[in-house]
Image 1 (cartoon, rainbow, N blue to C red):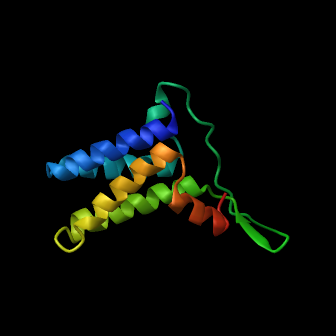
Image 2: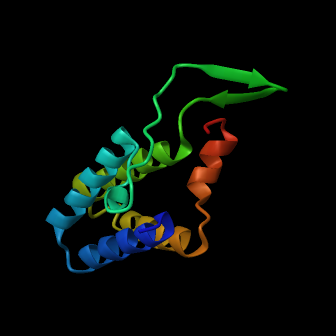
Length: 128
């Protein structure tokens, strides 16, 4: 399963679980995001082939006035999505009811168009 298809499937499961108020499934998806971000492997790639795990180096390169941090922007994006979902669903569900829906639709659009604004933002900030 490719990453765009996985994003679409993940977003559809998130949106369906939000619509039917299936809290357990939402927390399970948050756990999957955290595991994926920590190990740098997509769960969907288990059937295809495991991604080569990149080691996190505490190294910063400065070339031509740009700073590059040797950490993947996709991993930070998954951590950010997990934290935002946990805050909006777990801590403030009444006040931030729109945030999980916004996240779900953005993940679906990222899967459809293969363009994630959050990942692009982290890349502009210097992550690889």
